[in-house]
Image (cartoon, rainbow, N blue to C red; front, top):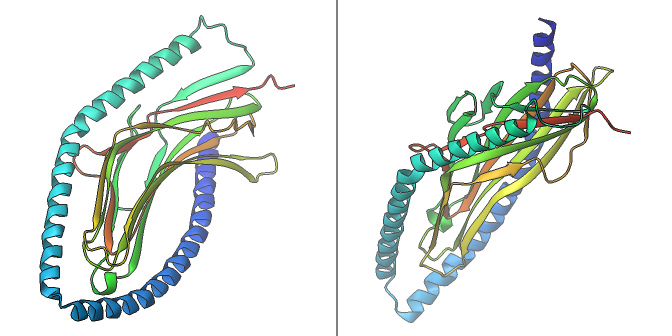
Length: 326
């Protein structure tokens, strides 16, 4: 009972640390977006007036230009529809391939860590394949099972209209929490994988305002444990997994589009050795986080892990505690 109580306490403390850091980042990002949006609107108003005068002086019928832009928009929509259908049709195959990769990797580790393995008794290693909790900040679903700690969600945003519309962004956070107690004091190292099965698509509207569309996905591995004085100690490492951007300049009426199927498995937590000091029999919170962010002006953007068989998965966390530290 005492261990369950302390596990709940460290889970609550770790979540509070995440919320505090993210609220500060959210406020900073919002101030930046408002500032940029105000500057963009002022510049677009001047350029719109200049463009209309230039078209009238050149004798160009603006209605013909608008009709061409509508045809371009239909072509972009058709392209994205075809690409999304093709990627979604392959999603179930991607899931099966990723599940096999997890089974193969687990089998290999079990061979190394088995009873006959000649490993140092000072090193304790374990394979955690079932999350304690998955927290999703946006719409979607989560489910927990051995090797299948799944989240389905989508970050998308759209902007357009008069002067290209406002700048907009959308952010989704997903946290996979694993709680574990080390049997001995030592230095902890953690390795985990984030499996992506989804799609990223960006499209700048085909008009003369120009525009920009961005998508990014980062993975973070965080460790939290109470110290001997009862204070939470925390360490984290973040890696950028996806960073995409397309844009067009003012006066470019063709627009731009990009579609990428995301079907990879990314390593999180091995960019540096954590060497996180841990106390025996005191619960450790291991949090794997994914942050999905899309940003647009006069464009659309989406990171889709919700449609059909799309999903994100953290199949396991591999922990190793070395107590033989001199």
